[in-house]
Image (cartoon, rainbow, N blue to C red; front, side, top):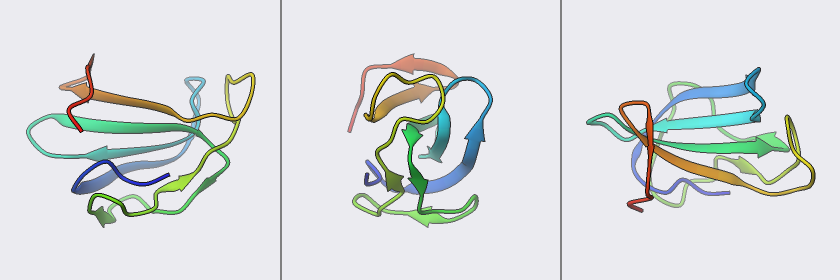
Length: 84
């Protein structure tokens, strides 16, 4: 799984909210991208990434019924249609 765009990792770890292994990239101006249910995380909190940087591997952690990527973009905490 690769980063959708330039930004810095604001969270990388286990999410108790059902997402399992989760990476959140902050793209500035309140936009974040979420990569959830990962089998492995390849970045650390504070790391800066560009589009295409590996952030993790697809998996089935957390509240999941099978291997997949849950990808989400949020603007100031509210889910929005992807702009990447």
